[in-house]
Image (cartoon, rainbow, N blue to C red; front, side, top):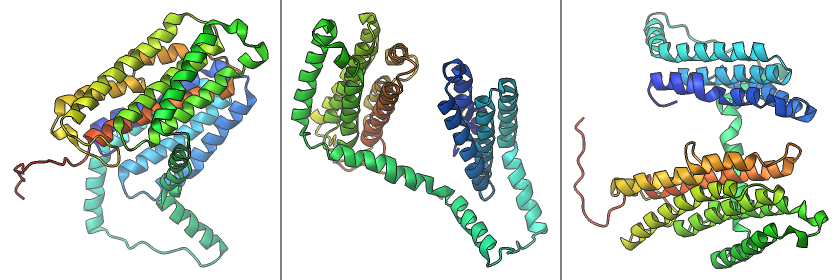
Length: 378
């Protein structure tokens, strides 16, 4: 939203914020008979309407006001989709996209006009909040809206911090033990995957969820690993391999499907590993405790590592993305736990990949030698 107004209008106002709605419409046949999922979608929609409408009314930035107003409307469209009013939702979808695009495009002119108008016709705002129960409720809602319902703090303390604590409490991890254990379990799992007759049927149906859970633990460990980017990258690759094994146990399918998924991961991993070793050979710190800013000194390495990161994260047009689509297609509709484990693992792996890139190549560069700095004049 801090970008130029035209890009905000096209990418945020009309496209990005509506992708979720489009996906819900596209996959409606998968969940139309699931009453619990409908309730979840309606609840999310109501939450969006209430919270985002309140936040929009107190924003001091016109872009933020438009964004939160748009999210409030998206909450209404969520409810329309869940109730089955698809034509109405599609019309509402398009109308909201056009409206927000138009609002973002004219927002600089509106701000200019309002500043000019306020200069000549300033009216001091009146404090109408009384010191009674209703007044206190209004004040509370106002403060919560100004603070955006502390959503940033909530996500940090209850999601990211919890993940970090969990990753740090995996005490069997010493990195070498985790790696050796993971490889041994993977080899055993791969053997039994091709020789399923040795596993009782009552046990084999739980194996995909067990492997999916183990994969998430490795992902979280990769996310919290700070002493070495190489170790984090290796754990990230192992986690993705476990995701593939988990789904292959779930349903018999062509080995080529799994190979397509893993080939994208492995190629991206090798490229990333080479870049990290080049940095290490040049006596560069590759720990993840701070932002090193190596993009300034090694722009080509930064670009290649960014490509590798996109491949690990499953960016569209990469083999990983195509493989993920195929892999997820082999999970059945009634396997909610496996779906959640697999999807969560892919999300955590993507975040970990981008974290690796940003920690190494973003930030203020630190040079081991003197470099003349050029400053713009005032």
